[in-house]
Image (cartoon, rainbow, N blue to C red; front, side, top):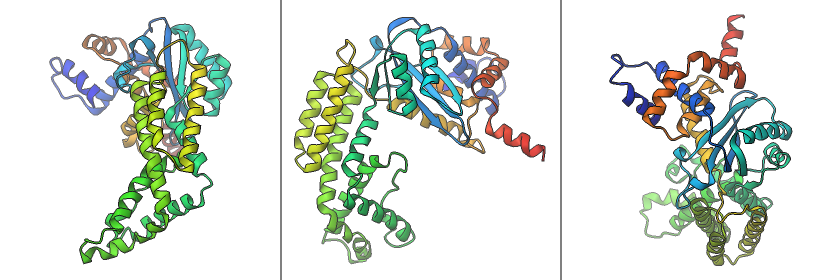
Length: 379
């Protein structure tokens, strides 16, 4: 872990023995708590990115990351070190009213939250509405909803995805195993369009390749069924290509009049009925966001960074026997911040283990693993 390496580099001159894994984890937690609780600069251009994360158990982790608009580099996507961790806490049930209270309290410390970027989860959407904070709908989630609109009731699309899943099950232990389709994501299933179109396009070309060795005939035979769906595969491939293009534009450059024009130019290549509907729905999204735009040239419209943050955190806790929520979620605050040597030393010297325990009691409570140990020991 890069943050752990940074800590070690500073302390290796002073530590005579190799620190244990527990010691290193405590250092990471100290650094996370320090970053989370230190005073933030008051300003009128704070932007927040917020989302929930679910793990084993009832609790949902709620994370809010922040960045000053004046510090955003619109030549690239956001990186961890660009961000300031603002809030990490968990509850069994989240409502718009609870999120409103939290956000208003947060705003009183920050100065002014100009807008928020996130999905349209009902509690987050309601909380932002109640707190009067503008809500920019994350482009990835919005595209997912648009694709669902395009293919949600499409019989051919349902047939292809079903047959791909069937192939994975039936052919995994056969000579056709090298060509079986990739697994499709269960959550946000309509974002599978990239997975489906990429595999189906290449597999269809393979099925039509007449120069293959005869030994590969069983493999090509197993994908001949794709020829029935060639128009659909071509259509999805075209839409997916445009999705990748406009996503890159918006995630790198932000949302602005300039990027809207570039996205519309990319969509000129779409001519099918579903392609035209895709263009219509994307432009409806653009119009809605333009109406909400604060007085600024470019705005963030992607919350990918928080999704990546959750992924990294879950990788940290993967060694936990129950992969449940623990105080290790403080690692989120440790790696979503810009570290320097003096701050690391300040964090490790000023934050105590009892501070971490108190924060854990207030924000996480008893972990599922500790509860399991306590209950089984009483049996």
